[in-house]
Image (tube, rainbow, N blue to C red; front, side, top):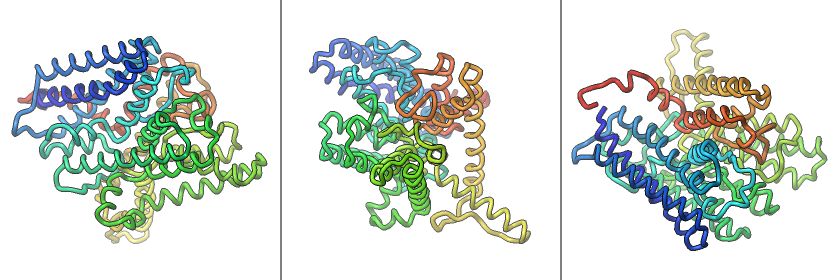
Length: 486
């Protein structure tokens, strides 16, 4: 591993983090939020100091290429470093203690969106904007955005793109890696602008529209009110949000390709069609259940079902109504969509629909091979043969997610939380959803968790955002073995 390259790229990342804090600083300064302005000024200074030290130690040279270990190190350490620097405004401004500041920052950048604030409505606008920005930068991927707007990475940049983008497949739209990152980032920005304009037309003020647009497209779910979307009671807004949450659950690579091939190519994508089918069935079942069991009128039941299926399947976590009061069948379907998540290459968390499809097709292939031992076949997805290592990777990831869910639940039970609440919080955390059932609640977060569970939640959010194996690779002693470049 080349430590000089890793340090140089991390230096660029910390500079990028400092630049991202400038808008909240300007907002705090212009609105006379003096504590907030001082906190962001200190944060920017710490980012610059970290940049100076990292660049003094390392740096990039003309012919440098990022290898697989450098790519993993930059992604993992970069995400960790940015999340740590991101906690400074909360702590330095006196809004949270150190542990809670860390939880809020990790939750923001991971797109989990579970807050530790008891009352977000009393927070200054600069802090609300920083929460939304942390969701937005973490949604597509800090390093992917960084690759799109900052230095050239060379051929080895693919290792970074693979380490941070989500899902079992990584479609490339263009031959050059940086062009791929630019294409993804361009779609991301375009969707955010369109979403903000739509929210404004639905009646939100400009500040609320921009904040909610960032956290919708990032599927992060941070809001500016305690009851999130329920504060507005706006049917048009809820349908609009549901639409953009579903859009954000699709692969951004798919959308970039659609600009070349036409919108029709989106609906030829097997994974996206399957995702739409799953959420449609879930919404119908929940709507009928709400009508029959809770005697809710049809329009409100349909609206609630569509909104919350879109919210939890996309792992955004916005709440329009208290779904924790829904009948058991509705809760079960919401939990299922939460666990499955969105599509590979989206900003959504969860297991990813592509992996579910691959696993079902893999099982079907094994059954056929048992019947016909000489059969030679492969798993197909969207008309393409999928490599065996990708299929096995999906199986390995499914196993890893289940193990991590059980492990985090065990940690919380050890910390005094009951079995049902532990399972709910664990699934919600590993799927990067935020809201859940029970202690976490529809509009609650991590503020009711014990301190040890909060600390562990940061680690599991780190694992889930980088899809487990990137972090596990870094924890392996062999990864850090010295070579001629380390």
